[in-house]
Image 1 (cartoon, one colour):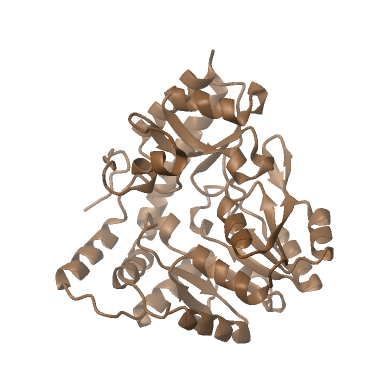
Image 2: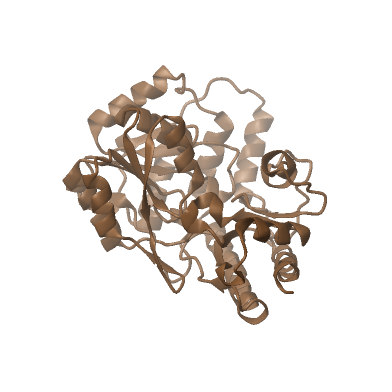
Length: 390
């Protein structure tokens, strides 16, 4: 049993958020609209994961489940073998998803009205969970030069000086695709330590560093920088398991870890999905080879888009992501509003994520999901050209 990344699966009427809910979520009629917005794969999960899930389903009993030794060993082995990170088993806490865990940490570590720093353009759900918890977002805009993004550390320090209590750090970054260097993450962690700011590092894209680039976890930094650190991870982006929800929060600080586990218990989140445990364990134990093949395929998709834009859409600008399968495309030279850009795209039958959804710094951009078969990408590129070439 192997995965064919070229195979086009019909995901319509499967309950897919990306394919079936554009009208409900975006207000768009989706008869022939090609969805390139939600960041999940149009590929099947790794064969070994499907086999493990099939075996678990055929067992037929779905009582209360708990993480066993295999689960913890699979995670620690994965981070050691893939990223040269020595995780301690006791650091690992398990949550139903990254966003619920981050939301609970915000509730625990800050109070209503406190400032939460996020780098922009940035993942909109970080803003959502902060503001819904009555916290104030403090934006630390990234610096952009010829499509390459870097951090404005002087501005970040001013954010901390203004009284920010926590920072949600996207490492690697969604949507701009930066795989932050060890020096960059060390600078962030050092500033957090200096100003007593909690560093909540979402590292869900870490396994998807592209060839020539490396993911550096904040956990790779010296232990003296771990005191106010939480690292959130999940197998979802890596292996296409977004709705088989399970995530792991690595918390070196023992006191905080104890408080976090108690908070999970208080919310009744101390029981786990047996299928999610099964899928995550199998993925981490068996699917390193599958992931290597997948990253090669995604890299080819990225190169195809880059070549297409350079030859067919030269008014656009595209800097290939260092990690992840999301293309951050600069449409600002078109000199049209975000609404006009959306209308052109929808009329041509393609729906990416609009950059404005990632904050004002994203105005004039679109984000395209390249986690799809080549044939889907070819069709998307043609529709993009139809939309934007007069």
